Image (cartoon, rainbow, N blue to C red):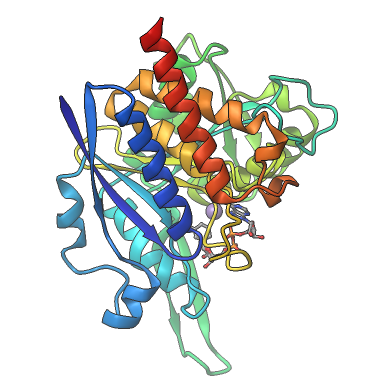
Length: 363
Ligand code: NAD
Ligand code: MN
């Protein structure tokens, strides 16, 4: 029997509710068959850890995670600690420390979800956004001079490297090629940002020659928001910079019905380090601790985790359970207009997994 070692980092806010729910669902999957099991290790890093130790995670935190097969993450963000400290001290430390340079964000309207795009037919919105996850606007380069004085200066400098752009373009073209439509949209802003974004466009063109069977086009990021709303079916795979894709993928999640549904994987495609899977939402201070969080984004992230570690059958089984549960409005949480609680949705997904496995065994 294969054992997968999964690090669980619930972090803050509703992360502490949805990550245990994700573990329950993974456990139900493993219990329903006999060829693999999970060994979970929990890490109590985040806002509370910061209050005790003055840091979001210990100095040797990355070493503690190194031997794991994957990481399931909740959220970093505490109402009483500045957001740049929680984000940089935990999530970005892991993403950057493990060079998880490809952030992959699939978006689809799941069955039963009332999404806001009224002119959007079934299947019209089926995207994967690839976010450059290691440099660009979030490289952390910059500073503040003359703090508090009238002549204060502050900079955040976007850093783009040829190697960094090349590897994310290759990843995005390869991902586009693996999907039925073989269609990639390169999101840019090279009209206004005339250095790094122009290099971004040049490298896209160079890499495109390696992928002659992929159709691709280029779209300015502002126009891309309108295209997502007005012509969703013209998009399939998108690649964008760290900041642009951050924003586009929240829009994508909202267009698919709720931020609470959307999953993401922070991937090291070379598999030198563990990759990290998480819902795209944050700590949701307004609903934390109340059992109202939608756990579907975490469950879908678990699907991506299972695909990554090489259990595609389990991934498909979990995705089918998720879709069966979203199809039932009685199992919708408040963000979807329903009354179900986190525990109701979790239990329903676990039961669906168990029932499917039993049916298959009986057949
Ligand atoms: P948020 O995603 O926490 O919340 C935005 C809105 O969406 C809120 O109204 C919230 O209730 C709702 N929502 C989000 N997830 C939901 C779910 N699963 N079920 C039901 N409703 C859900 O974004 P925010 O308010 O901008 O940020 C709050 C904190 O989270 C901040 O500290 C921020 O820095 C942090 N954050 C962390 C991450 C991360 O760690 N990956 C991502 C985004 C925000
Ligand atoms: Mn974001």
